Amino acid sequence: MKNKQTEKKTSILPLTDMLLKEKNPEIYNRGEEGFNIYASSMDASQQEKARIIPFIRPGLVAEMGCGNGAVLELISNTFPQSQVFGFDISDTLLQMSADRKYKNSNVTIIKKDVREKIFEDDTLDTIVYCSTLHEIYSYSGYNKHTLKQTLKNAYDMLAPGGRLVIRDGPKPEDELLYLRFKNQKTEEKFKKFSEEFGPYNIYYEETGEGFKLRSSDAMEFLSKYIYEKNWVIEVKEQFAIYTPAQYAKELENIGFKVIHNESYLIEWLKKTHYEKDIEVYRKNKDTGAVEIAPYPDSTMIIVAEKPIKAMSKLKNAYEVQP
Image 1 (cartoon, rainbow, N blue to C red):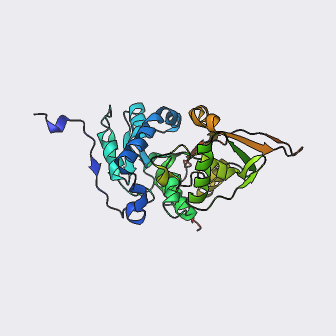
Image 2: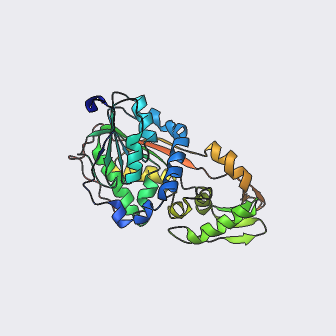
Image 3: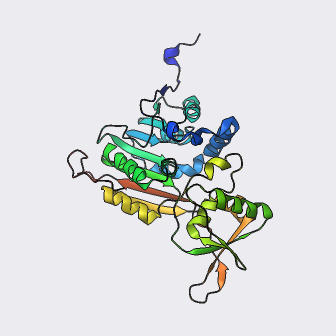
């Protein structure tokens, strides 16, 4: 019989807050197959997500919305001397995260609503939100106030000099784009998306140049159309809430100093899906001629620091406005 005291097993600490799923049960209706596909996609994108690792400040590190533990594993392996916490609300994903074979015994999995302030003020060295903030926004009724309060809570929980690392979807700058579909399946998926997108119906116009729509709506479609089994979940989420510049402004309003801000298109998405299914066009501002346009960026990474001199308990509190 194995000595249980020597086994490296990650346990799940119980939830003490109100469950997010009590208000938003649809987030859990993926089913076994849907969760397995969802988790597999997290594993498949693990190395791409490793781009955030150089920005993490070791010590007490918390990932808010840890999913199946793919990013926790990266953090744990890179910083074996750090204490790494993973928080999520999904029982299924928490169990997957706890069952993961971590090389180091420095990971703690806890069931929490990551919208809340989980730690005391001035505690953590790094907080990570990897593809989580758009879910917080979407499953809180598309409420920017909740998103802003979540970021304010992160500021308070960070120690002076601590870092906030965000990886999520960037809203593109406003412009009109034209989508041309290379196959009937993708065109039909677009029309389905226009009717079922969570926060609002998508307005588009069929023209001789293609399907004309706003750049932000084009980005939302591109971020979702590849989903099949999890379509009913993903189509309800708004992936791009702020442009990178708008995100930076919100963080600076809270008191953060933004030290890194980039957006980019994941090459795998471009080669495996976009180039096979869709062409993007825009009108030249000078000539009015329709010309090929780049695909909207799929991903952004923003890193912000809490100033060394800042203390959450002593500074004038930033009041989040609805």
